[in-house]
Amino acid sequence: MSKTKCVGILTSGGDAPGMNAAIRAVTRSAIYNGLEVKGIYRGYKGMITDEIVPFKTSNVSNIIQQGGTILKTARCKEFMDPAGRQTAYEIIQKHGIDSLVVIGGDGSLTGARIFAQEFNLPIIGVPGTIDNDLYGTDRTIGYDTALNTVMDAVDKIRDTATSHERLFFIEIMGRDAGFLALNGAIASGAEAAIIPEIFTEVDQLEDLIKNGFRKSKNSSIVLVAESEITGGAMGMAERVKKEYPEYDVRVTILGHLQRGGSPTASDRILASRMGAASIDALLEDQRNVMIGIQNDQIIYTPFSKAIKNDKPIDRNLLNMLRVLSI
Image 1: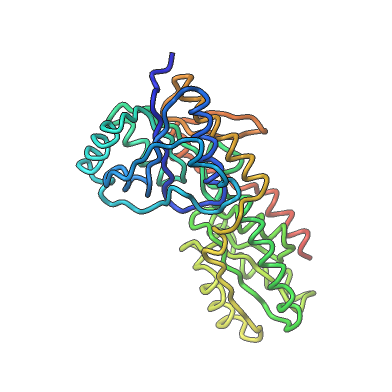
Image 2 (image 1 turned 135 degrees about the vertical axis):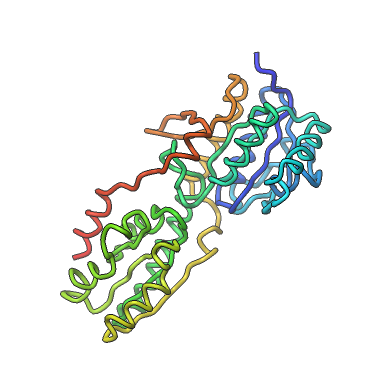
């Protein structure tokens, strides 16, 4: 029998469309199984500042279609300090919380792992990040919605790129991972994706200019991951101005546009499945694991693996993008 009686839910890190669907699923699955639920506002910060309220079914009504997170999210330097985590633990104990469901990305799960180890607290992670960069799951909550947002934006930019015969660099979120840029490029018919995973292996800009743009096209669209490794869209544009001054270059940075919007059906279903699975995991006495989905099946991945292991990019997709952009 599981010892879990009261579950605390929080969202942490960057918001992602579908987080509300996950909150709804966690809350209602917990209540269905006879557990108490407490909503923790503003992530780990809310545990320290005591922003914790009881959640009932009504608290999560009419939120599945909303972007962002009703629980809010915030950075919390205090939680990085042992004293801050001690305060957080004492406060959740006061509220009777004996387990946590943490919805967030890599940094959020890192905090969850440390907190779980220090206080022997069962914590289940639910991967919510538009970057899709967590090991142990094929997809993360928010990725599909962000990908559709990128595709829609690039479709609109293409109209003006073609009309003016310009080279457009469009900066896409993904500081350490190029999933959004690569698949966004494929979905929108862009000529290339410049991503951190292969930046040190090949000069992607030179490859684009010599093999694609120069030979057959008057206009091109290139998606660039915002990574420091790539230099982002501005870095690429500066290189073109210096090395290929004959080209008319423009830069568009999509920024936080990619985080917003009503979640797609795919993200709502994924978040609902993962949220419900987090309660199943607690009832099975699982702890310190991240819920994932692989080959359309729910799996559990230990925090240590989900955080430590890099999720590999599919090299076949890079080659396909090159083939289709001729």
